[in-house]
Image (cartoon, rainbow, N blue to C red; front, side, top):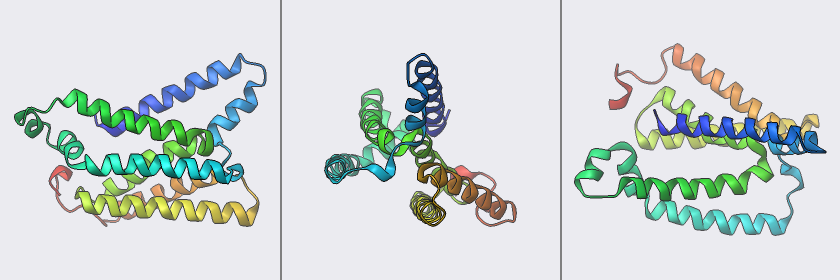
Amino acid sequence: MPQEAFIGIVYVVASAAAVLVANKVPGGGEAVEKTLVGSLLWVTWPTIVKLAIAYAALGVFQFVLRRRFLTISFHPDEAERQGWKIRAWDFLFYLSFGVVITLAVPIAGVLMVFSFLVVPAVIANLFTADKRRLTIIAWSSGALASILGLWVSYTKDLPTGPLVVCMYGLLLVGAAVLRKAGVGRTLPNPQHD
């Protein structure tokens, strides 16, 4: 099973469990809504500074170890041949990943965080398997969905989180239409793009 699929499944199950728990707690409905959509527009500057420091540290951590993480993910045979403890490195990756999610959910909500994690990668994978192009397409689609969602939210006075998620959905549909029209991958095996 691809790691992204595993992450998505764990995320959805955790979200469902949160809904079940909140259902039995007084005021649970409000808690569920906040968990699902976050409170993006009410973030204070001190929170932004703390998050910026935490994300910068995590970004440096991921950048420094990127080759090892990429090798373990895309070439596990090579990692084993070099004697790397794959489970330990996977644990470090998922630990840092978990910290990012834990910090993001109270602000952005489960729906938006899940969308940021999964949809850009899915869009990029429709068009290429090349790591650099995957990164460029994923980052670009994520930025576009965010900008469009924030703009429409602001101009139409609609909830930001759900609107960004809907923009991700529209971009994914648009990308699928482009892919179906022949834009993107040309090789029969997407693993060797």
